[in-house]
Length: 109
Length: 116
Image (cartoon, each protein chain N blue to C red):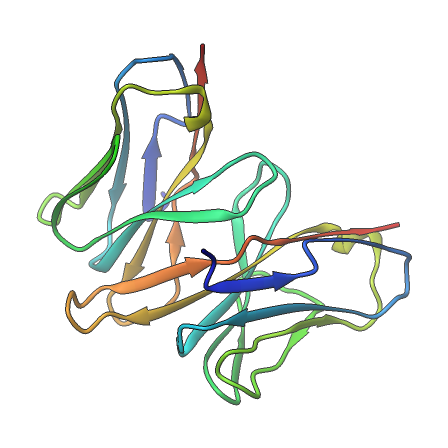
């Protein structure tokens, strides 16, 4: 079993839909990152979370430390949101990231 | 604006050539990482460094080598490139944010290597 699980693995949506991607992890962490990678592109860190909730524009990320769970929400989705979204955690006592398997999102006009 | 720079972005070379992929960051981060990623696949850690003169092998065995002579610079070298080295190489850096207690993380744009 992976230490970081993401769901769903693949997601398709119509433009304007509300999207949720989930991440569960089994280790104690100092931080969780939501990353975005467009096809053939580099990786952008969208959020760094150690508690609570953060919002950037149409993106919202939440984390529940007790339940070891995080969600990434996209409101009013747009085709340019089509990308792979990766959940990654920094476990306690290590500086090496553990990555989830990613969620491939396609938003159609 | 990127604070971590990778060059070249794209490189096509012949088998047997020596190549160096450059990675530089302007944030003063102590920790730096190299990841290898095949198209549509997961990221695999191949090298990391906790600071100057500190380098370690990652989880995925790689024939590449790295050096860390300066905090801001973490180049990756392949002495003799082969087609099996064709991949995307991503550099990252991190640092503990003392205010939040969490690790800040920044990725470079990646270097896409094709060995013919």
